[in-house]
Image (cartoon, rainbow, N blue to C red; front, side):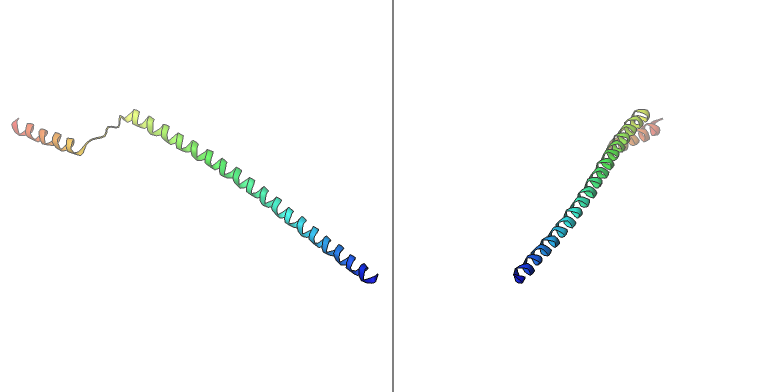
Length: 92
């Protein structure tokens, strides 16, 4: 009977230890999940902020192009225009 008593107590102690370990693990998982959720929220906020910055930069560029009438110049066309100007100045 003493042996059964001792075995019963050991099983109860083992069960208590497993329960404490499981609670500790559950607490760790809960904290990790909360941290992950916060990190995700931060990343989403940064993504929204970056998206707004990109949109603002696009608007600024479009306004600058409108204001300054940005024109792409082909290098060959510019060389030809310079040649024509030289020829005209030589004839005048």
